[in-house]
Amino acid sequence: MKYSFEMIAVAILAAFFPLATHAARGDVLVSTNFDSAPFQAGQTINGRGGFLVSPGVPSAMMITTSNAFDGGQALEAIGSQLTGPSIFYQTAATTDPNYDAIANGNPIITLEVHARLDGPSTDTGNGTADDIASVNLDALLSDNSYFSTYLSSNGQAYGYVNQNYVFSGAAALGQYHDLKLVLDFNQRASTFIVDGNVLGTEPFDSTIQSSVLVNADMSLNSLILPAQYTGTFDDFSVTATPEPSAGAILVMAGLILVLMRAKPRTGPLLE
Image 1 (cartoon, one colour):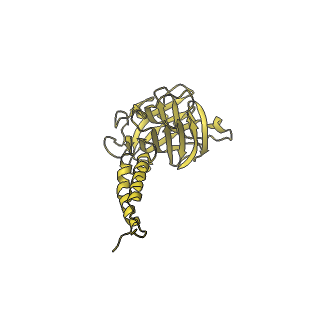
Image 2: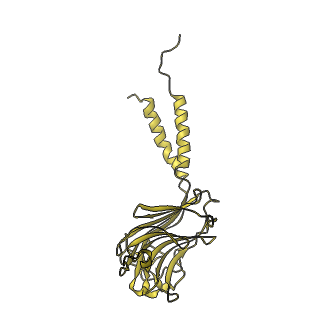
Image 3: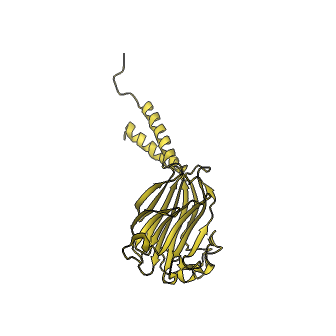
């Protein structure tokens, strides 16, 4: 069987592509589905797997076998255990990556979790004024810049930056949603994604100067009647990656150039 130049080129590129992309995978800072040790059903997450319950009491964040998105266990935030002043109750399972995205050469940090909020709807048609309780995927930088993608009791999902609502979209209570928060420190922008749909991308303002992710957490907040709400989280991850496929593009372009130069001539021979 004869092999054309094009067939050989495709085979070589296919062989080298995994090598080109391998170097661009970045760092996995956190990744868990809460199904195995050190997580135990009926026990707090506090002090296990690098998580602390802060703010809040350890009994507010428990490993459960109820309502897991997949596998056998999930993390449950229990509204009746929330603490705080009378106008704001909160608990959070927090990790502390202390990761400098720029210094490590991985300028894109992505937080993701499957989350659900169970409890009564607070939607009265008044928009953010009806945002009473929420489950949140949060990121805090070393300069105290704060970002969140979250589900609200008013049936909306929000993108939130430094005390400002920036984007929203419908997200029903009582079911899981895939929450994602992408911080791009090269492009200086944050992107908020729910169930694969981009709510929007917000440029960093001048107050956001840090590229160090200090905290990544899952939280349950409520302004009133916190005991009516429960939050559940599963498949939590925090990853840091280079710009998409930059290394792969360079390697592939170089290979194509080499192959083009090496392609045999097919024209007539000169006498």
